[in-house]
Length: 391
View 1 (cartoon, rainbow, N blue to C red):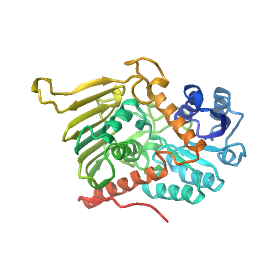
View 2: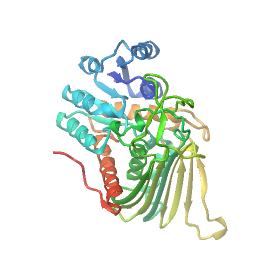
View 3: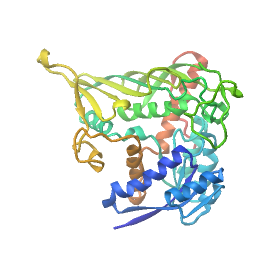
View 4: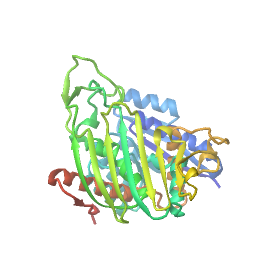
């Protein structure tokens, strides 16, 4: 049975391109699913970028007005890859038009907007999905399987850090990611991934105490429509102020009693994209690092002391999704393959007429933790995580 789903993409920068490739690859990698994406329309406020995306990915139309994507009757799915500060209006319009909505994290530019986005899709009765792509590495999925099977015993400790270097150069340009008017800083950008992973691996967070810092307070101005947030300016270029946070550190206490630490930074030197979680339980432990995403370090308590310690498992066809990309163990998959899995799981939820995960409800759970972290910055004490849900 074949199901054709009309796709409209809003925002044809780096992530819009990634999503478009992902839909195309999902058709190939999961061909037996019968799911067929139809590339209906793409939009970008810069016409040259929208036009180029139409030709490059095979969209039937392009527009410089995102509203044309939502208004097109052939569009079933509105895929939003625009800057965070624009998400709310787009999501509300798409939901009101009865369109299913995929949105890049963190959905709203702040926790309050994420709550409004979740309410919009819930009231409209449409499906939603979020770009928490780090859920999808085969070894992360396998780690979750070990936890569900209670192979680690009672969980006790969780540590996570997302240290990225994309803003470590002080001449890295002042894109919208560095401006409070467009949303949170590292807490919204990479912190949303880190919190979502903590929820996936351990469970809900009950309370937090956190701090934050901005280390680089001025940056060269970005050129509209050019480059990415990895772009670098030059000494002497006009500059502007960074108005959100470069670093966040938080102690977290989970509802199930696990104690943890989550750190994130965008200006650190050394790590490139060091996204790590470590989990300890009464019967074992595991460690995963995105920079080595096709590996998982596991340890199960062994009465023979000489044999007790971590073992590294390499991803292979025995692990979730891996066989869709290659037939051999130890032959790794890459970042964009995670977006392919994500696109497939999203489209599959629509075809099967059921909510998929992660969706806007999951994003709301992340936003509720972010709001508690922000309150802790002000109070300098532990803050309970309270649901941001709006009725």
